[in-house]
Length: 155
Image (cartoon, rainbow, N blue to C red; front, top):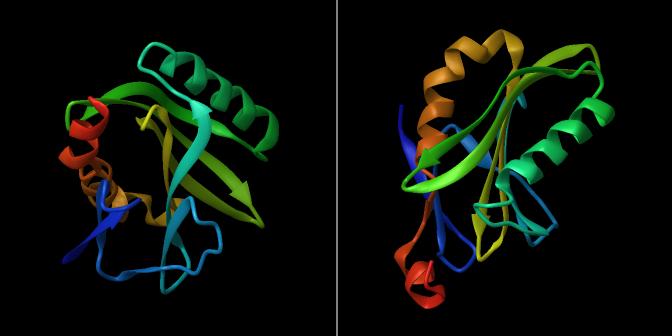
């Protein structure tokens, strides 16, 4: 499988996406989206508005979890944890949800970008979960906040 590298937010955030998942149309400047041709796999990278530091990551992750429990129809959490990607700490929630009769597998990653939230969501139909497991791992592990931003902001 081939991957494409994308640089987001003035070339300060980098992520790689499988080449068969195409950029999707979005009119929100703070969000980047990709979708597979069959529309069964969706990837979003969004800058959040809330302040986020390593110290309050657990609190924010807990707030998202509670919101998911309340607002997502048939929410089933499979894993909630902290993980390190390229020397940065992210909160991760893996869950199943049901929308319009389909069961979706979701990965929600919450990290920090310029002391604000950086949210990466990856979603596929539950039936294609096993086939996408290694791909989702590659996407998640590819997230980088580039040196330009680290030097400028002391991060």
